[in-house]
Image 1 (cartoon, rainbow over the protein chains, first blue to last red):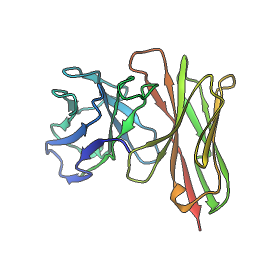
Image 2 (cartoon, each protein chain N blue to C red):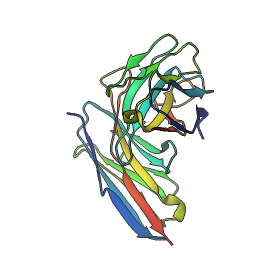
Image 3 (cartoon, chains in turn cyan, blue):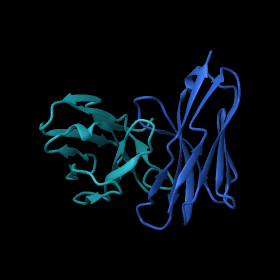
Image 4 (tube, one colour):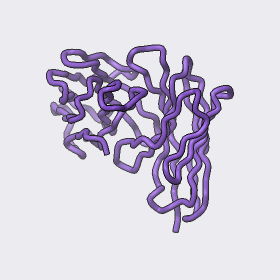
Amino acid sequence: EADIYQTPRYLVIGTGKKITLECSQTMGHDKMYWYQQDPGMELHLIHYSYGVNSTEKGDLSSESTVSRIRTEHFPLTLESARPSHTSQYLCASSGIMTSGYKYNEQFFGPGTRLTVL
Amino acid sequence: KNQVEQSPQSLIILEGKNCTLQCNYTVSPFSNLRWYKQDTGRGPVSLTIMTFSENTKSNGRYTATLDADTKQSSLHITASQLSDSASYICVVSDRGSTLGRLYFGRGTQLTVWP
């Protein structure tokens, strides 16, 4: 099982609140990703990072922001949560040839289920 | 447009039976194809990964096949168990970018009944 962690696992908050979803990995992977997934739908890439101080927006537009100050940590922040942000957020990481894994394989965390009332 | 289509959308089988899930893709240039298992409320876990030169790959009771010419893949589950109940996601990676962009199918929701 991959060493990638997300907290909290479940979060229910009111509209307008600021939230931060935590993601950390202990594999030394350089690349990290955030995906958004609605029930029965495919994963959509919303943010990614090639390494420290690198952040890029993904395919799906998102009002969230990310930061990558340390290799192992990739938090996602929503400044003002809205009901439309209700979804499952999955963090992943990958490292080319850093730990014997080929093909830039991504390892996923358990996800954060966010509900905004 | 790069796409990954899976069928069926959902499937119910009895414990002990076999089943086959299908994946068609249009991703180009193709790098590799992965099958993930995602339990409810959890993140996806990799089952198999294949490049264009690999026709089949097994992981215990899971066997994946790949036909790079027709751009089709299948995942065969043998002697199903209750713990196999999950969503099975087909994911294709392109080699057109340093990121190794992944394209996800919507998954097949498998339910195994006792």
